[in-house]
Length: 406
Image (tube, rainbow, N blue to C red; front, top):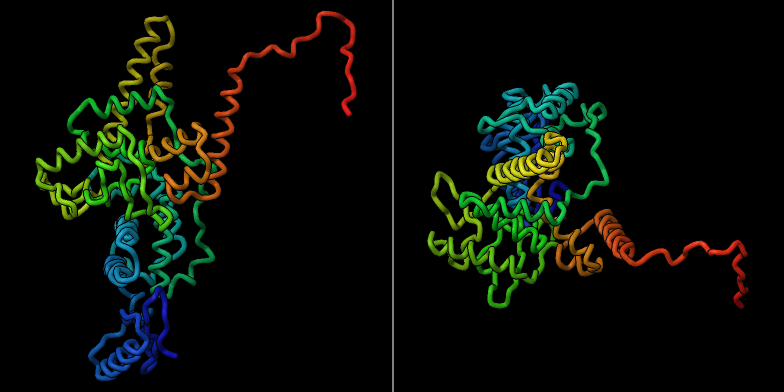
């Protein structure tokens, strides 16, 4: 059969005149698919449709091929997946430039991996070189694999391509109670960080991911019943209703007051609206608060270090060592770590796995095991505070007489 179904949609795969044509038919109905296939075959035979076979695709420059690849995927993936693929293609576009797909070899992919890890690939606005994690590079190579697969050239290089080793076992970073207070006091200290501050409060008070907050509309928020409905998440398991504690209610109240002043408080408007060039567009969600968050965390690290250094100096201790130790927990602290902060605090409070999953949404088995360990550690620390010394050595040299228990 020359039509087949994938991802819920029908596609055609026919060879005419020695040229293979593989196209999405953009329909879920088989009868429509057969009719569309018949029409397209007629157009091909009449010369009205150009070949988009893998062979022709492989001879396109990287940028053009990437654009075509994204356009094909738009109808078959979620908007979030489409956005992630676009972002992961950006460093690849910069590195490969106008090179034809067919000319990309395993050595070129290895060179991309090395350059990416070293921070040598700059794209978008100029910014300081930032450390890139192996997982990020692997995800970018994963998109490249799909693109080269579309061009039918991946199999020629796949045996020689090696993915980078990723660190395992690290679920997320968590601050101490004092460090958490310092971070949020810093966030509240300047008006320019209001949006990032409120977003951080919500993440730390609800376990919401960044993508869940960014896609939250005012119709999803019920301040009267003090709850929020997550309708867009990483997975279907992340769709949930979360009760709001006072901190979360206060943060949403500040955001609603701001939205009212901007004319963006309608039910269909986003809680975190897009802002470009100082112009608010409440019909689109904010794409990122990365810059504000990075500056906020850097400021928190600096102020914590300065305070620790001053105290150390007054007590005759090594000020620079104290400064580095106090600043270290904040350096590289991600916005997503606030989700782990909230879940860790739930675990330490004795919440069950079922309760944590109901609040936080999907968690992998590795995460559940991690938080079970956190919960046991919290219990052990609590028991360690009980009065000890009950098993003191006997005062006499006589052996302790024991009775056998029946």
